[in-house]
Length: 108
Image (cartoon, rainbow, N blue to C red):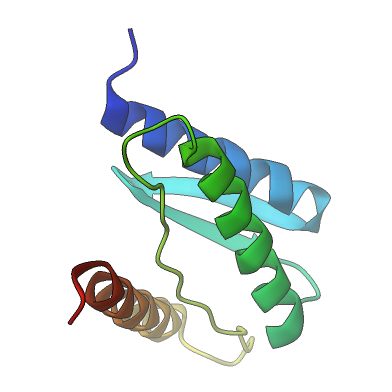
């Protein structure tokens, strides 16, 4: 038996992997956090990626009493950049997006 939270995590990761495919790598980095490294991408391509993923998760939520929604953070990595700084900036972007999603969900 799959617990509902597990279902959401599994379906989120499976959807990410399906969309990323040969365009990059995807990882589950903690309980409900994932990271993707996408090759040869720009902001427009990322926007399409995130829209396709959001739609796919919405479809998987149809039979559930809740929506599966992911907050995104993104940035294009520069090889001269410190990776830890890069990661923290992406994480901040994800939390900003998460805050906006909560405001929409709770009408704030």
